[in-house]
Image 1 (tube, rainbow, N blue to C red):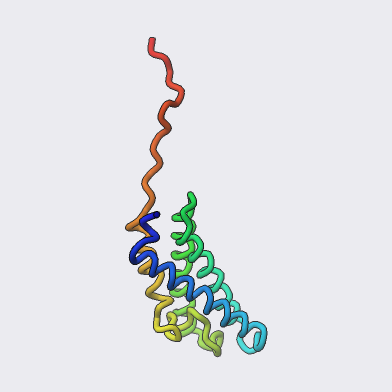
Image 2: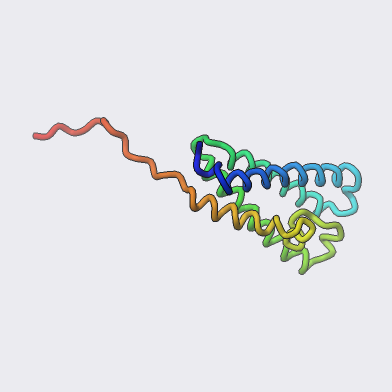
Length: 143
């Protein structure tokens, strides 16, 4: 098993999975029932849901490139939480109804702010080893 998916990594993946489900359900319900009331907030919740889904699957994957995709998704999430969190205080009329990332995720116990920080720390502690040069490749004959 990949070291990223053991110990704390399993917990990080599980929390991302829970957030993928909860943000998807919340955004889907809000968009289906009351989209006109707060379209920016609801679309940002949907974006958060997509990011959580991508992060969950990438973190759990053992495929080549999954570390890079995980890192990109989690970094995007952190930037999203910081930008949306700041905007929700600076331009509160855009967030009359809360989004997952508004007020830095206060509606979710600030887990949306803490999770990408922990996730990035975990990912960088478990970077994949650099690719080794091919062995047995064509070599120039010595003269």
